[in-house]
Image 1: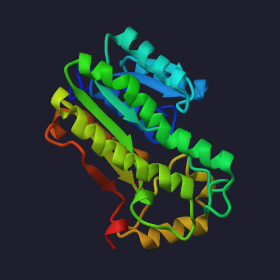
Image 2: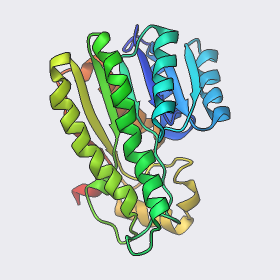
Image 3: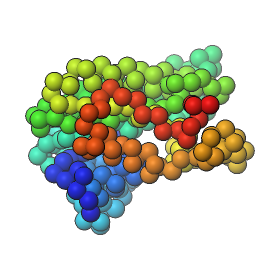
Image 4: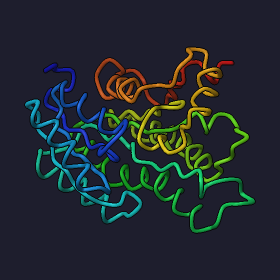
Length: 254
């Protein structure tokens, strides 16, 4: 066990699988107590089990991140259990390439749902979580963006793209507003990552297409993104706020 996050509590949404689970386990190994927010109770409890078996402390809280009441409950239960919060990681998101396509093809209900999960969820988390960070004397807010907010793609996902673009502006606004409270807010833009979220769409042909299009020649592993989140959660990034960290194997540099 390390001590980079010793004495701190992190609330991570979407921590039942993928990057969120990797971050939860990694943060816990560095001494953090983890509040696991996820819609899937079984997945959230499995993440908690992994942390506890390794000697860490975790609390699984089930809820829909698109709903204010559920996110408020995640914050309240986590703060009550561990005595406060120091890190908010807005990681939860959805990627529905079959329903979220071009503006010409996407139904309003799917547009609204994607925006609610990918953008509004960060609004609820920061609305209810930042007061806890203020009470703690400061902390770190980490937002999960995407390279989709930085470049256009022929395979359009316009609701997802719009949501991730909105997160950039929200991140910068929060960074300026709450710097006086010693609260930092930064956003990570991953490229393609081999997660359960992406798995249904990563056919062999698509994998080959990404590998040839990425300068580093491969798709990212969840831990590689979680490690960047750990950097932002800890003191190593103490002079960073309002920053965008692109972690895409060089994809957008080409």
